[in-house]
Image 1: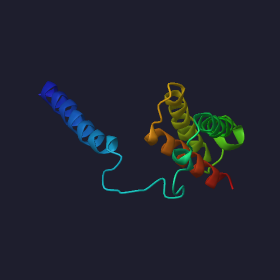
Image 2: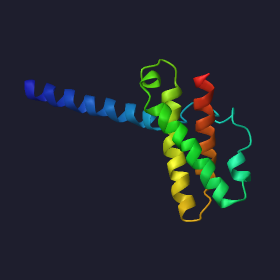
Image 3: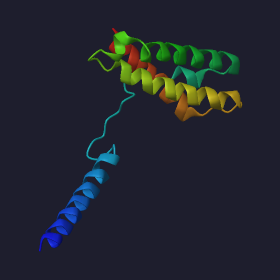
Length: 123
């Protein structure tokens, strides 16, 4: 009898974990949030010159890295650190694409968007 109740407990725990993880993994579940509404039209996309574009992406990435590694923002209750972390990753990906002369619009938009969100919370 005890073995049967232990098995039932394990199975119910697995079912609970499986149903909880399906909703947690779906970030768009039940919400329609536009995280980039503060950034408007991406100026990175409009930049024609590849050298200028690379320079601007590196500048945004460097600023994001500085905020993400600053103890002032790491220990802050404001979400600047979170957006800085997202921006440094997005800008790093965008820069990686640019090094191969490929302009990936999605990563360029994310780079600028997340950087703008970071700056919004710095002020």
